[in-house]
Image (cartoon, rainbow, N blue to C red):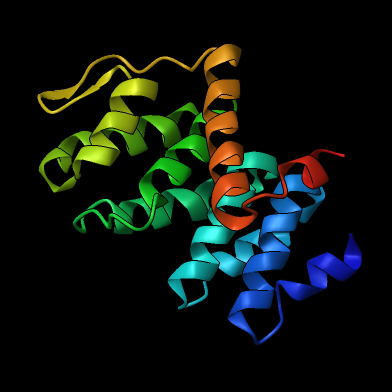
Length: 173
């Protein structure tokens, strides 16, 4: 795994994002520091790959960094080619038990910027975060384990289809 983790620092964007994707599919919480470093990159593809990995395997050390990223991303209009808000919310939901205030702030930021979300983001939000509405924020509960697994599974399934088409069997073995 160390050789794969080293790719996340490489100058080539494709190698960086490939390394981050492999960490997401095979890594664990020990990768979190590397993943957090990639959130600071200017390259949107690298930031997205880092968020995917954090949403799947990152531990709670990145809560502040992901919340800061969400608070920047949520005020921008949706990008139909990037699921950044979904990924940030997935990560923060996974760590809501330890950091409920961060998850509450994230949901409130999404509700406040509801009109800036596109139909795909709104569909995801309605599917996974029932308590977030355009009228504001109803009481935010910590998502149940089944919901967290469903959110994580959604990220992993999307990665397998987009980043590794035709290789799902190889990844699972």
